Length: 145
Image (cartoon, rainbow, N blue to C red; front, side, top):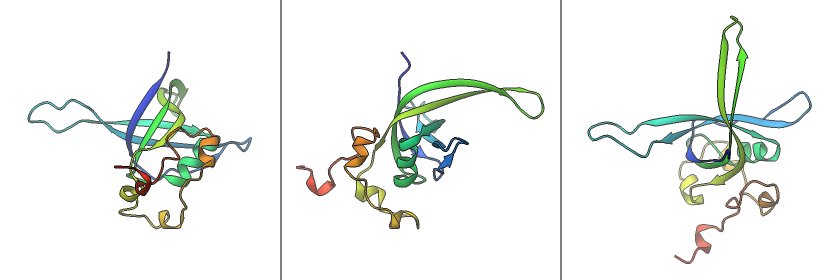
């Protein structure tokens, strides 16, 4: 079984790109803190490469920004290629099948970026796009606690 669940912070603004066959995709990385910290040392962080395709890629690029917490579910994919110098390089990426908000709307809007202020909130349609079960959570005002 190849399942991955991650929560981390985006290290850069995701950029939407298209393949030659006009399929949307985005590549981005997230910073994931390790759970264990040795006494007297700083917490270690891993930087995980993520690839999202089609509607999931569009969703990420529309609603997430650098520094924002994001949840990812997907699977690990490995690959290899030969670089321009003839050296064989190996890759490990997570292919996202689900993307989730991990901060309340008020937390993620505390320091809006110039592009964020013009974006609208996700619609109920994000659930139908296969983005993830938590993508259309109620607002903070709707919660009973």
